[in-house]
View 1 (tube, rainbow over the protein chains, first blue to last red):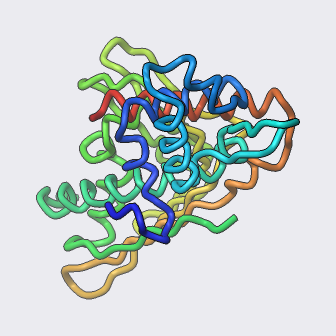
View 2 (view 1 turned 180 degrees about the vertical axis):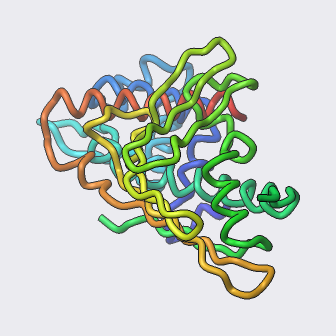
Length: 109
Length: 144
């Protein structure tokens, strides 16, 4: 996947990294700053920032200023994320559905 | 919020497609996106309006997924869907099966009502929705 892609990144791809999944899990407990996230993960602050940028690009998290710092939280109660997740599930389900429907016999009756 | 639309052709009659969709979902629904992920689980659509949609593990434990709203074989099924979410957070799914010729059908799925997940800004709902999202993330992690 190209980092320069102007399109929103695929949330499934965004979740393909264990640190990004860990970040999403932290944010499920509430908004956190980059520093707070970095304290809980064995990776550097710049690395956390990179992951957050990617998660933001995939529509999974949003950031907002809070006092003199910036905090990140899951996107709008995860609505977009859930819709995107469902889109991915339906894609996979539809492909599997076709395979089954096209390789099973109609039941007589 | 835009509805999700998934549309594709299948080499099957509407009758067969409807049957596979509603009577054999465990054969094609990705197991990674079930509550129990039990390899022996079954997925049930009760075949009438008001019927339950649920998964049942081999241990007999059931998890509610939704409720049939319109049961109109072989052309149409509509259902409420709240897998991983609270019942009050159900979205609506309509699936139609339209014959294209003797061998092929068009399947069109429309999922609407995602607004319900965002309308209220209550902390309780936020926590619940986040919890559901966490479950989704965990399931994704297990599935790769």
